[in-house]
Image 1 (cartoon, helix red, strand yellow):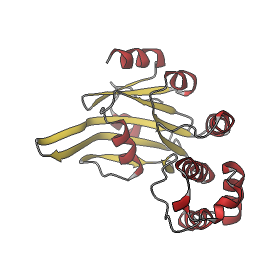
Image 2: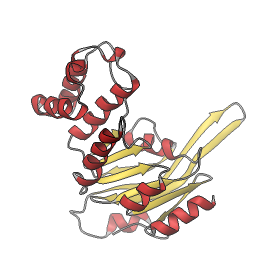
Image 3: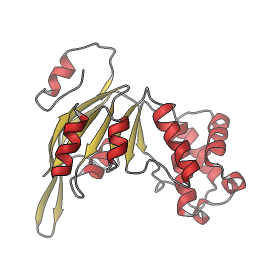
Length: 236
């Protein structure tokens, strides 16, 4: 069951299959205090996402897309509203800011394995194969290029068995061959996972998304009709 703009979130909570675990976001508000007063970025945003759903978050720059992704991941708290995280949710895909620069890539992988109680050897082998960084995994992350850090972060995001992936613009890094590898890992090998994508790419939305949340002026409307959603987005 897909929540639409005219369907209250409580209907999702009260009805349906009790085994259908979902992420249910209800009335999220986010305000920032600025020198010219309070600025409300998100104003009562609600939606629901289940396994296999791939929801695009559409809106112009400043519409609150990245702020919403950060709230969902726990990087920022909402001013008000609730999030029922019924699915195991990732950090924003390819988020490299959390690495300890003095540690090697190898040590950062070990750290993530401990946090998520994941088998280190399997995690390391996946990251080593996916990133193609070779011996660079054994040097401090602080000397990595931006592209190398993104590869490591991207691979670590995919290595953990998340049920819902958060994607903030970054879908692929590196050359064309590596970008194709990233797309295959996300959209083919993990097509049964939920995804929430804050993205501008019309092509990716049309090809891979099953619904869209269109943001404007802090408000959001949820649509299953991708063509209608992209049409509204381009008219903003």
